[in-house]
Image 1 (cartoon, rainbow, N blue to C red):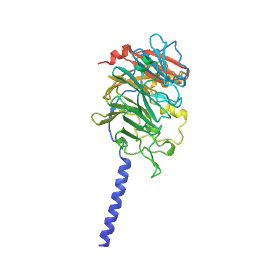
Image 2 (cartoon, rainbow, N blue to C red; image 1 turned 180 degrees about the horizontal axis):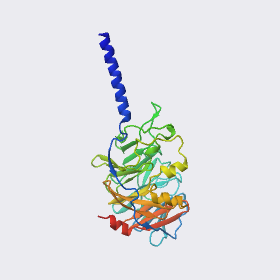
Image 3 (cartoon, helix red, strand yellow; image 1 turned 90 degrees about the vertical axis):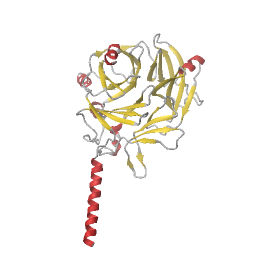
Image 4 (cartoon, one colour; image 1 turned 90 degrees about the horizontal axis):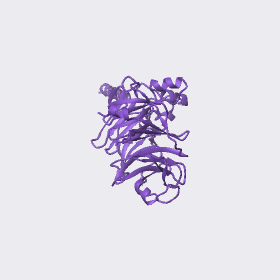
Length: 379
């Protein structure tokens, strides 16, 4: 009996070890992955046009119809509105202060989201150290001559969380938290994607990663998961374009489906290892993939930093060149173009097919005419 008992114990140990190893070797991604091919497929070079407009302290840009909106570090107008045709200022909104229609500090930014409500343009701004969202009714603010706030959400728990509002309001948020620390275990957990509702006590988590990738220095444990999120203008579809790998994550919250698009034969989560030191040179030349993204009803546009066009341009001393890729909301690659100028933030106006880019370092605003490109992908 003792011998049998020992065999059973040994078997249990072996089984436990096997399960442990298999769990660690399992694919880090829970969601299905669609292999595709989008690298080095872009067509012509589109030359940018630098506008005769300077907005001191501009941080981000958004465009709707004839309105061009900038978040700035100017306490007298943290949100400034210009006319796209005349390039003249229309309004200075969101002053720094303690009132409901003001922001307590000068560090605010748009959450890459605006929408219409009763034919009024609403832009979502984030401030107070990133912990508050405010809906600014731009149309009514211009009409009344002062800032009009539609709604406020204080449910953003920390500045590491990236959020967008669902259902075209900010009562229900899609949240990406790239620094989820487990205090009890003193260790990292995989980054979290979740839905946060002001009427619910707990977030509804969406499991994307089974485990973390291998890392040597825990300072970079979540390095590989970084990426901005954008939402479809009217549908509850959220997309994350990753900064460090050739992955794009899609979340359709109306039907509960999520999947990833991955560049075929490029590094996956299983064949990379976080280095001990992530220095600037390594980051910008090897690990900088997708950058700024914006969405229209039919497609999303995202800047791509890791193609041969940019790499060859950098080797020749031109750090400006970058690429713009287009995907539909089902994850299909539609096409792309090369841009001759580099910009830090994007906006797009479908009526004119003009892509607007903000160059933060020299406060220049650049436009690119995408008319021919849009025709080629508008199927």
